[in-house]
Image (cartoon, rainbow, N blue to C red; front, side, top):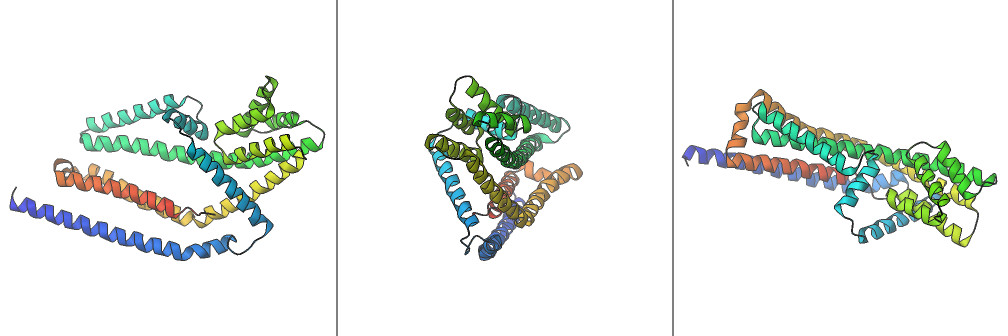
Length: 325
């Protein structure tokens, strides 16, 4: 190895270490600022000192949600079950393996297209990885929108069921009315419960089965409450109204949290997009400048470290923008 190449490697390593240390210092300062402002955020959310009936309801909701998470974590799920859950939450119409094969095919086409135009293996792999990341981000956004729509429709569905029960309809009739008046994704769920009950399955088992396959905490809580009420007896209309009130309170709290963390989410998207866009821009505008990252081991190491840093930064900023309540 020539002395000049050794000097370049040392300089690049020193620059990388300097940038990485600066980034770590920024992360530490950001975490410290986040911890100091956490109490202020909790005060703005009114969940620290006040002990109103609404906060008690939300606390009970959180405890029930944590119990569901613990019971779910004890169960071992296969990779096929996870894919099916992802397909169900995202609302894809086709089977999970078909969607995965389609994404893999698009990623392969992106790799071949970039490799054909002279981008090389590294740029082709980056293009394939970009396709997978874009699909994952789009899927997560679709899941989030569908979850918000599900919560809003479920609250309206519980109100319809409560009014139908007070009008004299049986519980199955109330569910049938909900399935007719509510669109996807809540309407087909209640329609499935009515169909299974008509085929001979008990209503309690049908509700639990649907809640188990839906992977939604609100629907699981609804299924548990209705099952207990059917077993012990009571006013189902009041139960529907109580569940709807709890869901409305939780929805309002979630909206306030999203407003408070909107700036952090925007900063996350900008900071993650800048290095990715700069990487592709340099490959297109000045490909000779990027050859050192593909042809030498130090360059490959720095490129890998940069990718890991971007992923770790995305994960860290995502964790900092989540409020526990």
